[in-house]
Every structure is written in structure tokens, then in C-alpha cells.
Length: 300
Length: 46
Image (cartoon, rainbow over all chains, first blue to last red; front, side):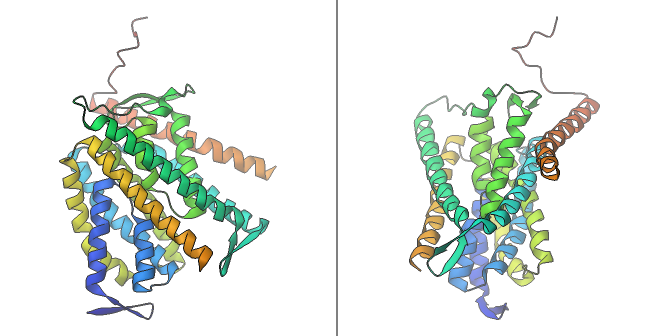
């Protein structure tokens, strides 16, 4: 059974299955899953890239909303922290997009058959290195804590910043942390997102856990709320440009909203250190996809 | 001049936004009758 998307016949069951797998990952890890779905839609189904990106963002908004409702019920969402992060993050995204335009004028590099801003190409390698380093560190940390009885929560590296004003997040278990440390770290991730179009939940979950010291289940719930805000913002931007295909979104959402709920429920039954352990592998998979795309660009 | 102003806005807006969110949530918590639990490391009886 096929439907027509931008003139390309696409199998409905394939879309529903893809939506289900990505929805489970979104629900379980609090990520959007864009870097995983977009290449599959493009390579496997042959859907044009702009439509893939716009429609995936719209799907992410729906899936993240479903996930947020479930985590809200569990009491695992720190709305205050999410809203604070969103302010810095959106400014960072705008800065990243502005920087991308500026870098485009500076000079381009020929990669395989296409040309792209030189710095953007090198930034993708830096991002790849960053993801591999983060996943290695999470893997080591979670393995160290895995066998132990106390199952300690990471302390949060950014808590050492002394710059006032300080804020507290009782739901997250964070007594005191510098406000500038929160908003500027979110701004930094936003710049990456604006420049490369990736790095929502996949960077926010480690930042919340290891940067701020947020409890793992709350970090996943809060990250899904941040992903929801970012996805709505991205959807509006792409919808104005006509990059959202409603049929594609609808069939992806059928699978993903249901499976996101399952993912969120399974998350509650698994200990924090195990979630961090599995999260390291998800980051590695995303790094693998980015690495594969970079090599494909170079060798055509 | 416009560039400097843009940079200042980009740097100050996130802080202002964060402070506003903090104020709103503190206000709502107080209205509900409970606020952030006291930090055991701080001596409030000065």
C-alpha cells in the first residue's frame, strides 16, 4: 500500500514502522531523533531532503508532546528549567543560522560533487568528535556506577560556576546553580543546532545530567519538553517555506505517538545508570550516521 | 554600533528571560503555599 509524497510512491507500513521505532527512542531517551529518521527517509524512501527535515520536525513536535504528557503524569518534568533553557537555546539557534549565512560568504570548500561552507564542513567533524567523546565518557561513568549499590547521580560540572544570580530546581534535585551557566550552555547548543541542524535532545540529556546534575529520569522528561518547543519553532519555520508534507507527518505520527508512550513507560522501570548506559549507544549510532554522511559526501 | 547592540541583546536576553521565568515560578510556588526547600548548608538565622 503506497501513498504519493512529492511525486514519490512511499510504502505506508514502512512509514508507520519507522515512526514506531523512532517514537520508542524519543519516549525512552527524550530525544527528537531527527539525525536517525532524516537519512532513512531520504536514502530508503527517496524523499527530498527539505521535505524530510520539515516533516520530521513536525513529527517530532507531535511525538514530543505525547512523551511530555506521559512524563508530566510521572512528575518527571522540570518546566522551570526547560523554559529557562529554551530562552538561551532559541537565541543560540538564531545566532547559528546567522553565522551560517556569514560563513557561506567567507569561502566554500568542494566536497565530492557539492560545495559547502568550509567551516560548516569542519564543524561537522568537530561535532562527530564531540559525540564520540560524550558517549565514551557516559559509557565509562555508567559502567563505573553500574555494579555499585549506592547508584550515585553525577554531581553536575556546571555547578562550580560562581556567577550570580543563582537559581534552584527542586524537581530536578538541583539546590543551587548559576543562571548564566544554564542559559549560556543552552545558547552554545543552540549555535550548534543553528549551524548544523542537529543537536537537540542528543546534547541536552547529557548536559542536564552531567552539566547541571539533574536526576536521569527528570533529565529525559525535561529534555523532551525542550525538544517539543524546539520542534514547534522549527516546524513553523519550515511550514512557511512549504517543507512539511502532512501525509508523511500523519503516517509517521501514527506509529511514533503510540510507541513514544511505550518508551516513556519502559524508561520508568529501568534504573538511571542503565538509561545512561543505553544512551551512550544511541549517541554512538547518531555519530555513526553523521560519520557515514560525511564519508559519503567526500567519496560521492 | 548596531552589531555591538545585537551582541549585547544576544547576551542579555537569555539572562533576562531566565530571571523572568525564575520570578514567575517563585511567585507561583509562594502562592501555592510552599517554596524551594531551604538549603541545609546556609544559616538563615543571621
